[in-house]
Amino acid sequence: MKRLFLPIVLLLFAVSLKSQNTTDLFTDKYTSGIDIFTDIIMDAPDGIDFRAFSPGVNIYGMRTYQVKESNFAFAIGLGLGIHNFFSNSVLNDTSGISYFNPIPEKAANGAKVDYKKSKLTLTYLDVPAELRFKSASGFRMALGVKVGVLINAHTKYKGDDLITGKKTKLKEGYVPNIATWRFGPTVQIGYKWINLIGYYSVTKVFDENAGPEIYPISVGLSLRPF
Image (cartoon, rainbow, N blue to C red; front, side, top):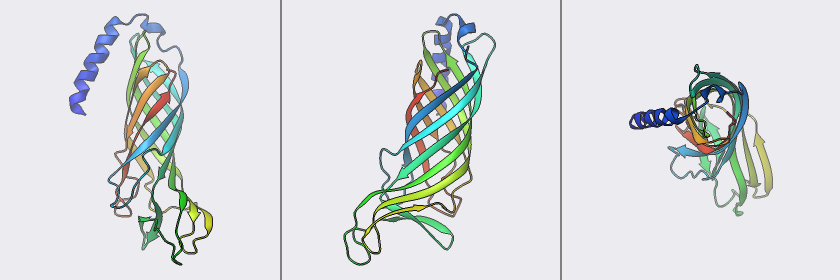
C-alpha cells in the first residue's frame, strides 16, 4: 500500500497540471450515490466456502468542501452499508462462541439435503470521509476511510431442514457476537459517474475470541456524481 502512495500522488499532480476551470469542478456541494459490490471473505474457516458473488449495496449522501480553487476536495457524509455473506454453512452458537457449521449432505433422518441459499446479512450505519480529486476531463479518484456501527444482523436459510429433510425457510433475527463497530480504508477511481470502488475492513466481523476471525474486502462499481 505504501509503495502505491507515491505513484498515485504523482499521477494526481500530473493530471491536475493539465486541468482547467478548477473553480467549477465541485459545484454540487451535496451529492448522493450508490455502490454495488461483492465481498471477498478473508481467512474463511477450513471447509467453509463463501460464494464468489455475494451482492451488497452502499447508499449514502455526502457534503463536499473544495480545497480552495484546486482539483481536490474533502467530503464527509452518512450512509447505509448492506453486506450479504452467502456460504455452504449455517451459523451456530455454542457456549457463547459463534461458528459456521457446513451444511451436511444428509439430514439427521438420512434424507438428502438440498438448499437454495444460506446467508448472513449485516447492515451498518456508516460515516464515510474522503479526499477527492477531480479533473476537468472527467477523471476522478478518492481515498478515504469509513467508520460504521452495526444496526442489524440476521441469517436466512432456504432449503431442506437439517433434521427432518422437509422444505423450510428460516430467518434468525438475533445473531450473537457480531462486532458492533467496523473501520477501514476506501478507494475509488473512475470517469465521471462510473467508478471502481474498494473497501478493506481492518476490523473482523465477529468479536475477538467469540467467532471466526474473518474479514471482508469489498470490490465493485459505483455511481458517484461528484
